Image 1 (cartoon, helix red, strand yellow):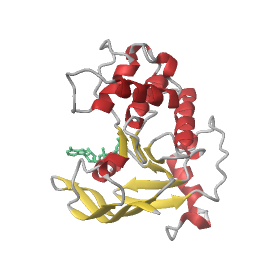
Image 2 (cartoon, protein in one colour; image 1 turned 90 degrees about the horizontal axis):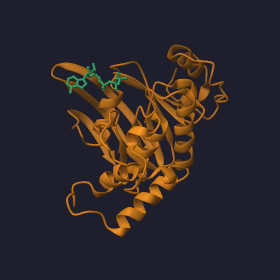
Image 3 (cartoon, rainbow, N blue to C red; image 1 turned 45 degrees about the vertical axis):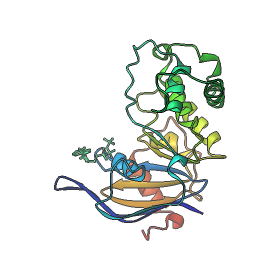
Image 4 (cartoon, rainbow, N blue to C red; image 1 turned 120 degrees about the vertical axis):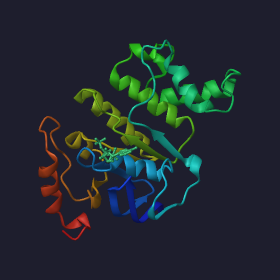
Length: 244
Ligand SMILES: Nc1ncnc2c1ncn2[C@@H]1O[C@H](COP(=O)(O)OP(=O)(O)OP(=O)(O)O)[C@@H](O)[C@H]1O
């Protein structure tokens, strides 16, 4: 079942075309990796799916309600020196703009604690966010998105500036969440990510989609595969569906 259907989508900032004639279907249960060079249009594509930007050409058909979409942005606008706990960060996402100044209900707190538990961070609930490692902090941001009970979660470079061990932990968490939630993740960590993704979309103004069913994904995460090598490997697969 398709959750998102993108048809002939193009987008430009000012006069510069960033995305051109994009076609993509995101299926329920997929773990889709969006890869591509810097400036290729990956974040723009996520923002269009999330309606933070409006398509100028083409269509995005979403077959789930808006609140089914969870988002973990690239740069969480949070000053990590601010003395706020992991639990409060999760609660901020849960409350949204509804009741900012009136405290949290028991239900809010139990939902936030449940989300922290899901990401393995329950025992860190009262730790200051600035005292957590990069990987732990990212898991807290994932918990914040989980609190809204999403059916699909879109993450923009969730492992940027995290060491390889932390990256693996984040992806393992996403793989666990993927049992119930469709995952779309923008990433540059190709070697690690490929062990977890079910399909990959390479975005560089245009989009090329590959299914990863038949590729040997048991890559050694210490062996760093560059994007060109990866695309060459994918290009040899008959299952890529892109006509290459
Ligand atoms: N608000 C904006 N106004 C003008 N140009 C923008 C804006 N946002 C992004 N761009 C430009 O659009 C292009 C695509 O940007 P985008 O952030 O989507 O790329 P990306 O693939 O996510 O890159 P990265 O891997 O570096 O995060 C870039 O050339 C960028 O400079």
